[in-house]
Amino acid sequence: MNSKALTRAAAVTIALIAIATIGSELSATFKQLLSSIGGHHWIGKSVLSVVFFSLLYLVFSKVSDHRFALRDTGLLIGTVIISGLAILIFYVLHA
Amino acid sequence: MVNPLIFIHAICAELGLFAFLWVLVEMLNPTETRIARAQMAAVIGFAFLFFAWLVGGFYYVEIYGLHVKPLIKASDAKWVHSIVMEVKEHVFLFLPILATLTAALLYKYDGELLENRDARISIVLIAGLIFLLGFSIAGMGALISSGYRLALMAGMT
Image (cartoon, rainbow over all chains, first blue to last red; front, side, top):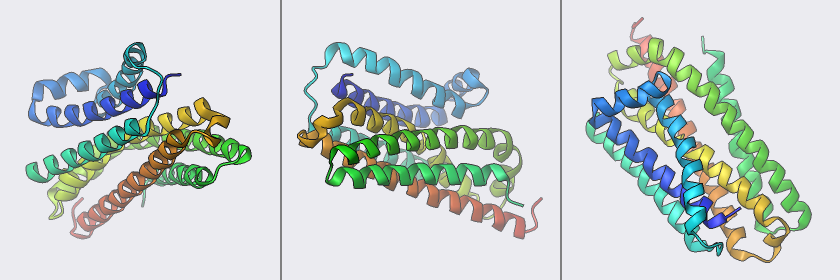
């Protein structure tokens, strides 16, 4: 298993969840597309998060070396904080 | 009456979060035995969070959206849905990914965690993040329940 690739896949997937969340509120077409995956936009995002996490791991494991460093974890934690805050701020502003 | 699915969702999620707190504690000063316990705790934590995801998702789509959300949105506390629930349901999706990563790192590095400082600190940080993020989400769940009670007390049916 490539730890660096898995950490990067986690970071990018979390950022994509935030982008999909905000995007689905701004575009009715995109929300409908997500709903078409599992009958509800939240199910669509859930399914896509698993699919993207798996696919991104496969992609990153081809291009990342195996030297896992604390910097990779820092990047992940930063992504979680920024993505969480982006979702919170978006809904506060659009409530 | 509180829907039993909410109770199952909350209990499973909280057990999952405490499992990751357990991982964090074991990894502060690891030995081979503590690493083995941390691996077991991470698998248990992942399983509980995954089950909480399924149960919470079923409740959210099949019950909350049809019966609870309309009452909250019609009440003075409509922000409980439009901010708190929206944030909760989406930020929750981060947790299974972080839980998978933590368990995978524990099994990948195994005994090497005694020497590999970066991997050990990474596991401590991610497990701590799961615990803090998860309990923020649990707090949001309590707010949503309060919003629903407020709507019911205001006579909305």
